[in-house]
Length: 366
Image (tube, rainbow, N blue to C red; front, top):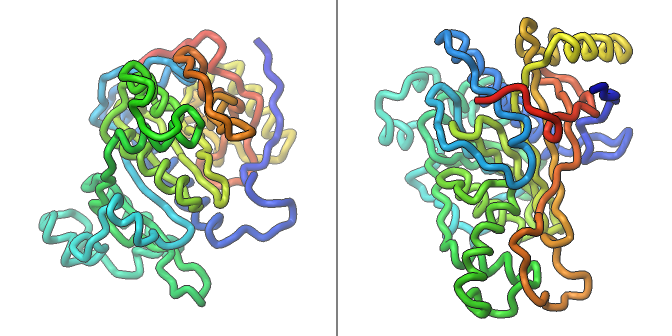
């Protein structure tokens, strides 16, 4: 099956010729690092251990697909919350930020006194644009449940993004989250149980589907969904990075004020067959792009990073006039796949669109 490649701009949140904001500059750096850490470095760990990498089956990218339950201990995982501004005081009861879990050397060593790499720790490493930031992230991510990055500058100064807290537990009653989403989307008027327990069971599945997680998702993915809802409800701009050893992909939940909705995109590794690899190299020549350096995680076999973007359906948006819906259809999808593209993992502004995988027969299974 022949697919037409096209060149697409990765910086889709800014207008042509416009200087990126400090938030976008920091976000791009964090995203590139997370792609390398979660995907590329995990792949290298499997190669070094002489074990086959468990590629995500392409058909599992379809919304509603069942996620395998097996976990792969060699695969890196993470949960990082990145905010454009400062975490509001009213949300600190949901995001555990205390003096004891600020990013101070003494706090870190009190939790993990033998943590490798801390002998090189410097406070400047907490800053996203510092050369040592990625080294600090590699130290903290294997240790931690969740990290918080936010603007640490004074309000009158230019933004200065910094890793400020570790061990950030995300705490919220699931029932409150379900009720909030149901009311936002006009499925509920006042209370979660106003339509009975069967409705609550459906809403619990749909809540995870809203963030493109399967209904058996737990742990970090559930925490990411709760965090995504909280920052979108407060009309904050931010990005949540989530990856587990089970689904072997990097998910970004993005919010942008004043929009209350959540954008969902995922990054994963995929192998190319010889025909696909040849077409990618030819496409790179046509656009003067260095395919080997920017796109190929491994040249033989050709392994690339693929970005998959999703969009909510009408069923997952509030009704246009704010009227209460008559019911909920459990079979109606709340999210759909809208774009697949091969993206550079090692810098570069442009991606290769038109690389469709999800709705053709998967040749690779885990």
